[in-house]
Image (cartoon, rainbow, N blue to C red):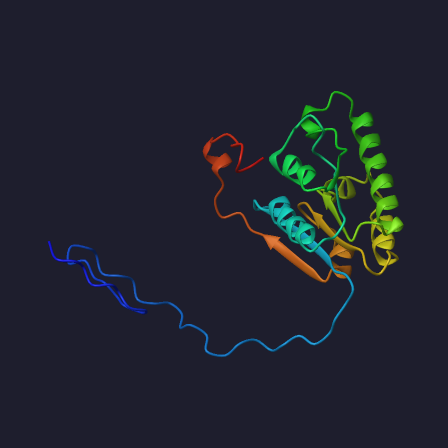
Length: 210
């Protein structure tokens, strides 16, 4: 058989038996967005919404911070130390200071008062980390839940973030982020659930969900 010619950049191939392609919906942009000019020493990011990916996105920021040589801390407000998630194993291996201080899902709780107390203690520990200024990135994973349940004073969280040392960046995750939290954030991302495997009865998979 003859050797097939190499395809050049921008070449288009067609399969006579294939269905015709849908016409393009958008044209590729030919002009870039305006350039940012303001430099700030830290950022506040909020990942919220009912879609998957809030904690996953926060772990991506964690990896970037580690690669930049930053000291990083992660405090988890729902996941407990019993969960042994992949992100915790990877983070610890990379030198991230990690505290899984939650008590698990509330529907599995046998003592809701204890679960609430655990969340309060987790916030006290997280607030101390932020104020100390030793870590350039602090991830507060799933903190919006105890905030919305009234277990953690939202005003205290907002005030602590506002008065943090200038070099400390913070990522906060969880559904239904309170309005005051959104207001002080530099970036707020709303994860939208269009489709989720769990809704089809598919169990969580190690390596994907945890």
